[in-house]
Length: 411
Image 1 (cartoon, rainbow, N blue to C red):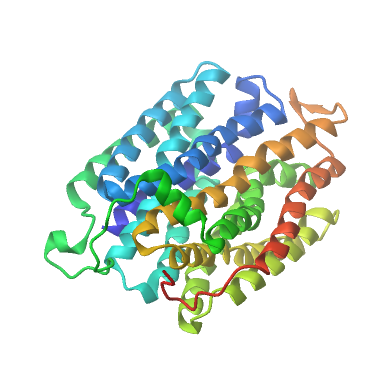
Image 2 (image 1 turned 180 degrees about the horizontal axis):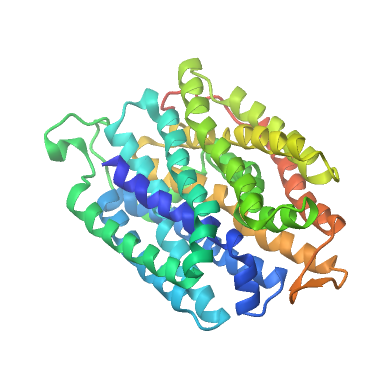
């Protein structure tokens, strides 16, 4: 039940990161600069972020099965549109459809986890969800680069559309919203769920201090990983550390792999400690220190840089604890809505930072070109990446006000 939702989330992460590997092709084919490329990649985030709260409401009301099936079908159509796009507008519309459709995956997975798994496993399951997603990101690294070199990016994306369509059929046939539909006991709240009016439910969730604090903090913690691993890491490493595109893709994939591998362990440790806040704070502090050293210090030894990025990826996985905090802080019947709000904040990091870094790069561009594509110096990248660190510093202050839930439903 949960695994098919995880497969859709994997595809969503693949689509999220794919532009980082084909930046050269996209900039050349659509004749665009860094700011326009950042916006093309961020079209995914615009619709992804916008759908989070509606996805949570729909998961609470219609059930994850219907939401996941519809999402996978629309994602297949959007991927095909992107693959066949002849101009920038069509490519942007395809990315917009992809982001809005795959945006239902994570919230629906959390809803399934709340029904099919014991509450004491929730943080670990959220971490496993991230691990599944990052497998998709890794497939959009070196493997995607090799496939694009062999078959062209349009053909590869067309095949991805077909696979996503088949997944939509599998979800509809196999997934069930609750164990009771298969004759098993459910972990869902025993009290009958009353359908709170949509706006009232959103207000109730946001009225919980922890929910909106997680909304603001999560984007700052995940944003640098999504921005570096999802778009600007490959050109940065290729330009300033003289790595090939495949080598740079391998390094950015390492960041996401470490993020994924550490996620379940951080979640399980939080479950075992019966504490959420200490790990959330520690991860955010270590992530800020790691990103600051890796991205702002020039010409680090390559081995040290890779170790720093791997360490920072592990530290960033603490963001998954925030989803448990939001779920445990909101009313139990609004678990999907709270998860949607938390994930909306989570994805704001990539949505805001990818184009913001591109904007700063264009402002600091010195006019250098390589095969018709803009090349940015280290100072330009340092100015762009500094924007991410400012938000992360603000998040560290907000973490002070988060209340501990002790791994139990507080409402």
